[in-house]
Each structure stands twice: as C-alpha cells, then as structure tokens.
Figure 1 (cartoon, one colour):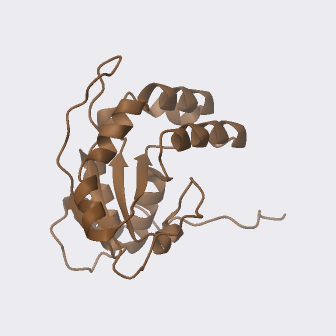
Figure 2 (cartoon, one colour):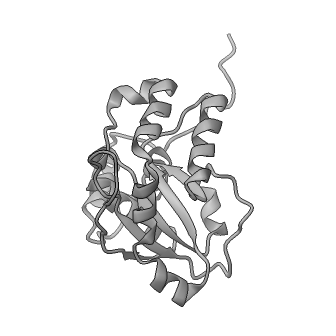
Length: 203
C-alpha cells in the first residue's frame, strides 16, 4: 500500500527509527474489513512522550513524540473515495464505518509488547486520508478516536506536504520510490512547496 510507504518515509525523514509490525488477523468484526498496517517509530532525540498534545496532530508535533505505534487507514484498505473529501458529513460517516473497536485494537496490539519492553510507554497514532473541516464534526471524530484509545491523528495531506518540502531535486536517491517521484516532480517544476496565503490581494 503506497500510504504505508509514505508514512514510513515521513517518519524516517523526520529523524525517527522505523520498524514494521507483523500483521494480525481480524476477529469478531460485524463485516469484512481489511487489517490496518502498523509501524513502530522511535525518536532518539526525545526523552519522553508529551501526553498533553491535542488529538489532531501536525508535523510540528513530531518533536514531542518519543515512541509510538502508528496505524494507517488509507485509500487502499478502506471505502474512502475522492468524493468523501468534499463533504464533512461523508467524512464523519466514513470514520463511523471504518473505525470498529476490534479493528483498532488489532492494529495497535501488533508489536506492542516488544515496544513496551524496549522503550516504555508509547502513543497510539493513526494516519487517515482526511479530517472534517467544520469544528463540530471534527470534534465528533476526535471523540470517537479518543474512545477507541487513539492518542493522536495525522492526515495524509500533512504527510505529503512535509515530504514535498523536504524533497530536493538534487538530493541523493535513498531507494524509496515515492521520494524519488517527489524529486522528479520538483525537478520538472510541476509543483512548488505549499504556501499559506496570509493577506488577500487589495485592489
């Protein structure tokens, strides 16, 4: 799944050590859902996890994370479609359908015992395609995630923006095809680093 490779590259490029967790079978689900892949990440520059972070995380929050298990809910293992991106109501429905308790529990049980033994307490993070924009619907999704034991959530958009900023056309290839693709895109001038429009133009 391409999202899994993007997530691994994202954490590696931000100074984390990354290890894949073995998949575990799903049991006792009401309907057929694919398992969520998980990776274990550890930031050697941080001494302990900050437990006072918001559920909604951004790349700037990575410096507050020591170690975590990271599950990936992506386009390849869910019913997510491009149409869902245009509707907060559909996004909220998507999360209600995809975030079954057994599915999340199975995702975060992979590698948990060895991670605790080696590095102590860890955070449970989830990567998702997108989150609602409207605060009320975002609060509902955040409450659902918290009930399921998820400590923080990052969007694929945040990950893509971070990787695009960090990619350089002249950088040495590191073997990851997704990063090489970003370098080609930049080299041919097909994209620029994301910019925030702070001031509207005044006529």
